[in-house]
Amino acid sequence: MLKIGNKTFQSRLLLGTGKYPSFEVQKEAVQVSEAEILTFAVRRMNVFEPSQPNFLEMLDLSTYTLLPNTAGAKTAEEAVRTAKLAKASGLCDMVKVEVIGCDRSLLPDPVETLKASEMLLEEGFTVLTYTSDDVVLAKRLEEMGVHAIMPGASPIGSGKGILNPLHLKFIIEQSKVPVIIDAGIGSPKDAAYAMELGADAVLLNTAVSGAKDPVKMAGAMKLAIQAGRLGFEAGRIDERDYAVASSPMEGLLPT
Image 1: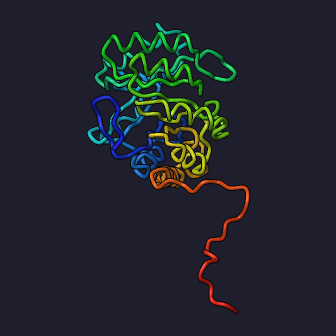
Image 2: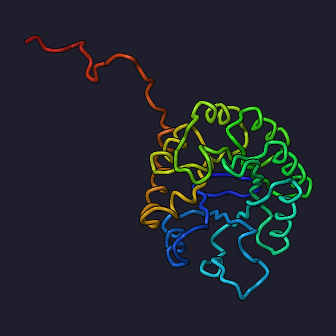
Image 3: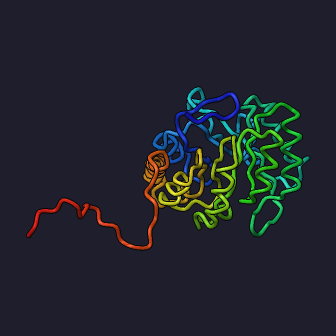
């Protein structure tokens, strides 16, 4: 089971809800993925205006936990205001903290991210923080008390996969809270690799919504994450520079 704060989940796939070709495709992809946590950018939907198109109306919300994120925030104060807006609308008291510091790379601002996380913890939120693969920053966030750390595999929406597995492994090994690989995943092999490294979960959006067939890709990602987790729990063999016979040489019958 995946435990975040006081909530538990069976699925280790968190799914974003942006950029799908239609609400119908989005709904089907969500169902096929079997994700239990859905994330969305609060600033990209009018949570108080019932007349506006809303993907939430397409889903049975009793079966999902919503994870609003603070995408678009450039400062801690902006992120906190956005999180409070989502909470006031009655959506959820969990929030994904996202404070972008560079418009070109979309990498997070470490100073404002720390500040926003601390402010939201003081407000009683369940805080999941999007960060870079900075090992020390991840440690500081955990010491502060965040409920999950979400290091990026590569730049948001890039599809480049895992660029720095060593740093992700360091973060995973040192963390006592869930580590959710977020951003840059492009294919099922990337998702499986993240889980093989020991990640607790993977958050996807563009890799599914931007696929030629988002519904099939949602299913593929679900299976990849399950396989990667099983592989991690099973424990892979050690890598060697030279061949090792799969059949022992001892006890062979003479020819």
